[in-house]
Length: 364
Figure 1 (tube, one colour):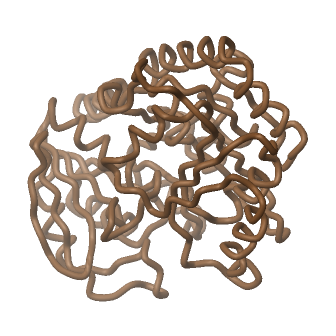
Figure 2: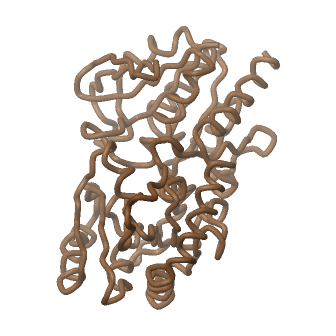
């Protein structure tokens, strides 16, 4: 079985440090242990490299970007890249490469599956749902939001590498941590407002460059809110440095909102929450907003806390509780790690994905 994964944007310094970029990379890397797998993505210059795990990553040159959007690269090389695949697996269903790959696979009679990561866009009058053989969704919530056909939908979730992301009992945990893009729907402004006076916060993430007015003021707003508090902005932290950040934190916070401070609706919000899963695998208790698919990942009051989005009072209470009750934080951290090992590893995700592939092969 030869599987081609297609992701419109790369994960890392030449692309984006986002969950929608990390997901196809990690899933393809895990699948490589079982099947012949290649990840096709796009950039300014063509390239081919092979990871230590044996995954081939092929970067196609983007001749242009539809509507100037980074998730819509246009590359003639895509037709050749999918030509010899047994299964084509696209990510960001509504992206331009996903649509082109779906049409091409239909013409070639190649099995085509997709995983949606929340990219907005039209459904071609409902035709988009008919182009794919299977929808491999990251949560029950994402399947409901996308409206994928029930009989052709499987929920495979996502994961973390339990060897990279694991606790270190020799490290003294301190303060709160946020990891993610610094965009208004992530709710970092509410987190800074809620931060207790005696607490420290580290923020790892890059600023979104696609913001609309007045949201372009968001980075300045965060700086103003943090002025008299113990807040450290780390910027876009390298992937290799993330595990140590999770291990050092006493609590991880993902305070996403469905409606931003600017009144903009961000539905769907948090289809899964990969950063929360990585924190859990690291033995770090989590505090997350009760939005999207987060409730499918976090056991409220067991592996962490779920709070109402935008409720700074409740958020402050929970942060203070976990920072001052070390026994509670340790119990929750242990349960979070156990839950991640049970359900949310990339190996488990790959096994669910492979079972879906095999069902298509049997049907062919």
